[in-house]
Amino acid sequence: MITVLKGNATDQQRDNLIRWFESQGLRVHISKGEFQTVLGLVGDTSRIDEDLVAALDIVERVTRVTEKYKAANRKFHPEDTVISIGDVKIGGGNFAMIAGPCSVESEEQILGIAKSVRESGATLLRGGAFKPRTSPYDFQGMRAEGLELLLEAKQATGMPIVTEIMNAEHLPLFENVDVIQIGARNMQNFELLKAVGKTDKVILLKRGLANTLKELLMSAEYIMAEGNEKVILCERGIRTFETYTRNTLDLSAIPALRENTHLPIVIDPSHATGKASLVEPMALAAVAAGADGLMIEVHNDPQNALCDGAQSLTPEQFEKVAQKVRKIRDVVAS
Ligand code: PEP
Ligand code: MN
Image (cartoon, rainbow, N blue to C red; front, top):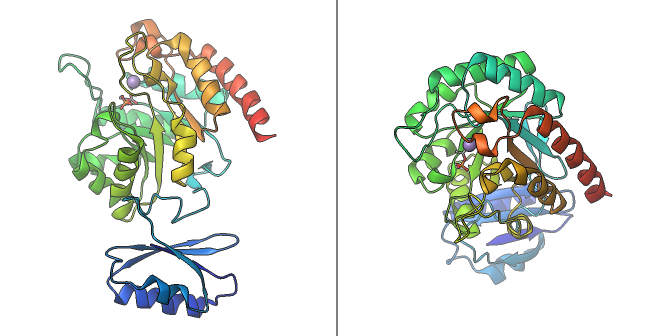
């Protein structure tokens, strides 16, 4: 249930109402926008007489929220959420360009790629240290050592870093990581979602290979219900009958999520297509469709990459994509 307050409600009147809701066993999520304050009620609201609440002087209207996701729901928080990662902002008209290799492979590799993507306009550096691979015989990532190298690249370039966690026990290693990624395969690892929900890190939550948008929002809700509201959603393609591409990029996820949630939305055209030649057109289409950011895999030597070389752009190709993205952004913003 949401209670929208009238513009003239005083802070004290608002606080009294919040205290009363809390005394009824509810949690109150406050969204203070430019024009209105929305009180989102989480818990069993069936005992609340909505006519009584609607009749209060300070209340403009009361609406029942039927969706199971509450904190992630746009009805609870009508304005776009803007998340700050160091000096970088994402959401509400702020665009983030995340770039870097699929996996950290060496000091030279990550430092070199970090510097070149930063020069091309990337604002966040990605790189996998713990890798979810389909085969146990494939490269599993440099693990803790990979995280150290990412931190070194962060120091050298000033770029905040994004990297995937696969096990809550590894959280202490992620202390200096700026954005923790929950990969597609772990989108419904609910214990992991709860664990990162207890941290104050920004979380990049990827859509599962075969998950609906509602399920994605419910997974965001798991994180937010623990108190961490800094969630970025990422569409990275879903599994369909098509085999030409690695996955099928669901671009309609952007406007569809936009209608239903206030959280920032990022598109990953690299994992969505699996082919470097398809990354640019899909990146541009995503920006045109209103994405708040892109996540693109870049490798200095794609042919010899230890993971996802086929979908990785060279730094030169990335530079061209970044330039075109800026042009499309100008068109969309005008
Ligand atoms: C990745 O970002 O390298 C990755 C493994 O992505 P996904 O979880 O989307 O497959
Ligand atoms: Mn990858």
